[in-house]
Amino acid sequence: MNKSIHTKLIIMVSIYFLPFWINSTLGLQYLTDWRIVANFDYHGVVLAKSALDNLLVNTGSFTDFANALYAWFYLNFPIKTFFGGPIYYKFFAILQFGSVVLLITTVYAEFKYRHERQMPDDPFYSRCLCFILAYSLTQAIFEPDIGSFLRHQVILTVPLIYILCPRQKQARKCLL
Image (tube, rainbow, N blue to C red; front, side):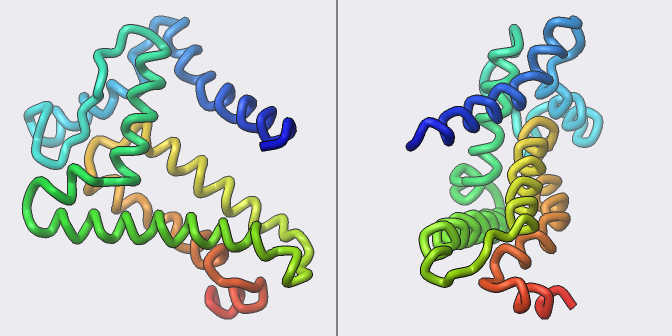
């Protein structure tokens, strides 16, 4: 990777870490602990079958951040969900795997073949990608369980349609 991409990645990770650090510095409840509170309020127990628990006990901003990253991988690549729980969990997991694979391959193809198609850069495409990533990372902090995560992903439908359609004109047709 070139230096520009490294710099952008460092900036993005720093910006994502900032709320964890501020929350910890102010002595507020850790951000990822809210999912445990929500699960207890909703299910009456902290570890219901579909509930997502923190991997580490929160002791500071770094463990809070690590729990959010763990949750992001757990929710977006639901291997445990596929192999555990009722049969319908398998369908949820397959839906999520399919969405992630489709998004990754589409973004890869866009960057790989952009110059061959001689298409100008599309700022709306970049904004959709940023929105999807930001929304996904925010979900990793607060989503209490797999069901809530999948229900709330409906918001990503329109940006995903725009990204998955190879040309802007086709994307507009898909959306209308």
